[in-house]
Length: 309
Ligand code: NAD
Ligand code: UDP
Image (cartoon, rainbow, N blue to C red; front, side, top):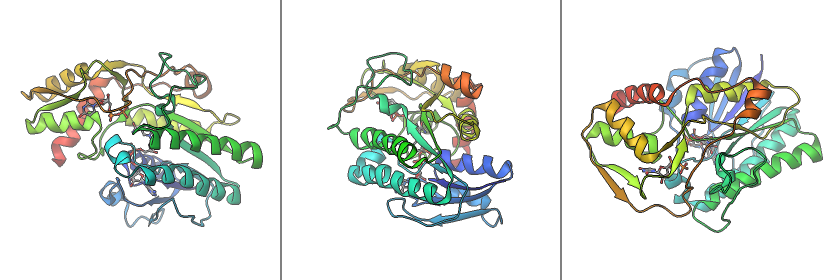
């Protein structure tokens, strides 16, 4: 069993990953600066001998003894990563350097949580890993998109230059319990709005598409990638089911029984028009594909939000 570091471990995905690692018998160190995450997400783990939480910002180096590192620290929701874009870029880039240095020192395997945003507003649809993307370097999403692209570059350079044992996954929109209700991403926004009877905020005309993956499926893919031998990635992890935001809103209204009205608001800058992963590589190398249909995942997520709001 390994000593595993999870950066961003108090966040939505990170806290599910900590649970999974502990269930598999590993010892977990979670570091997080609580910028968008919450100690509530890991409060059920407090007091366990095999779990340690350290409040720390990955922009600063840290010295720990670990066998494996999952690097998830980074705000993921557009309103949050755009609130302090310079800090977002530093988190991605300095965070990657600090964690790669730690991996190098410990001879540890390290996995980077990259993103479908590396494809920008894609001109190829659906997106395979060898598509190099269509990314604006100067827009409001660039701190995140380019930060994540630079982090991937650093991972591959540490691999080529120093032999660091890397894994890179490109995560497509993932949702589920423990999303922050104030997070601002579309699934949590629509569910919270529907449950509160507030207007459902559609940005643009609602015909843009996303492919939504349920958190349990994503964590399974992430674990398989970390445990896979001889394959660095990058590999897409996501659910190829593609929906418009109008279709998502309809499903949320149906499943919640809400009478909320749709309101249309301006589309934020550089918002990708469509997004859908090609997951052939994940199928071939990891034997992985998502199992949870959108409706089923939404039901579980709605049940969570019903309890907390
Ligand atoms: P999240 O905001 O819930 O989690 C991010 C966590 O990182 C939070 O707990 C936050 O406090 C922490 N963090 C942020 N900056 C930090 C810093 N400088 N130092 C230490 N901790 C810091 O978001 P999430 O959805 O759980 O995303 C986790 C990771 O997965 C992110 O790297 C994100 O870019 C990536 N990702 C997520 C999705 C998705 O759909 N959920 C898609 C693509 C990529
Ligand atoms: N979106 C929306 N209403 C909201 C929040 C988001 O219509 O209240 C749209 C957003 O413009 C984007 C899509 O939903 O087209 C997904 O947004 P999210 O922030 O969840 O993820 P990302 O754009 O990073 O994929």
